[in-house]
Length: 449
Image 1 (cartoon, one colour):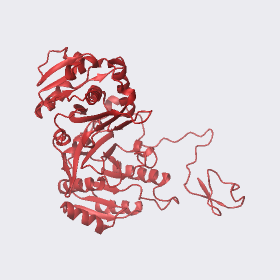
Image 2 (tube, helix red, strand yellow; image 1 turned 90 degrees about the vertical axis):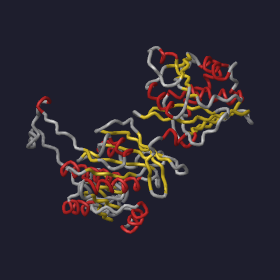
Image 3 (cartoon, rainbow, N blue to C red; image 1 turned 120 degrees about the horizontal axis):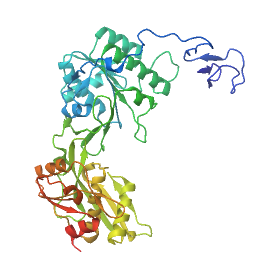
Image 4 (tube, helix red, strand yellow; image 1 turned 45 degrees about the vertical axis):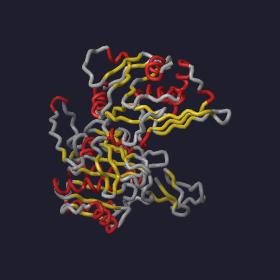
């Protein structure tokens, strides 16, 4: 890539500048290009790049280091793998820096020196947060630096076991003329940190900014480059936070970690179901309890639906915490197969407590809650509703039914309405179950005719 010294125009090749029309010595090369081998010239083979039989490759036992935060270790697959590159993204102020600072406490005490590089805050600002969180380990070092060459020099001298870069958008290489946070800077800095992690066996955490759409800012190659991509989610007006893995080369991507933001930082939520159901009303029409399976952990969530006559010609559909298109589909099935006249009704759907449910096992809960609100008849409070709903109104089987019911029984639930096909296997279940084959049958059993 070349840039015009007169007007700043960027061009993939030198020549006449199409902007200022200058022709002589106006372009300067930004990044040194690697020349391709000439025609007829054989490319040289780098040492150590010989092909090896797959059966002869020896695997080293991966060593993991626990972070002292059980929820974070669960999402990572059991702990931090040495030499791995981990990217954590999330909205501003969601708690990314707080989570990593709390993880650095145990990592510094258990696994030697940890270097925390802050590019957005001064050392005094990070110290104030650490004192508020009660963090003062002996092996935690702080560096306020954005020049990646300086960071690499300090890594060579300190030889840390864990490196945290907060954030990758503030790091820059002086060799590149583009501003910090640009595509070229983020890509090159990510490559340098990846080589650093693999060569020295250092676990590197990168904090990444997100765009307005919720995706990680910068080039998508950054997500392909790292070993693990974590998203820290949650509503800023709710106390809970959810940590999800969307990519993990050393573990499952189905696990989640649940935290609660408090004055002393992030606190692990050992029983998320009771946390989400703490303020559940009793005997309220339109309220149904469903179960969402997140990896190996079942979460019980409260679905609330409000159906009221439409004030205008076109009825409103408002959905919070669930997929809008799927909710509209389920409302259409309810109207067509059961005869509930929703074309004249406004429908508002909400997952209480700021939770989020996306799997099809909550379909029957949405349908029953909508019918309950329209008929103004409550669903029993100690009842769990599970099932996927098809376009013909049938209720399909769900996965992980025993795990979901065991979680419900632990929280005091006595009964559950489940798909009929899930009861084909004679397995002892912890609660009383009733199988249904269609949404009409489910509504008849729970709400009457």
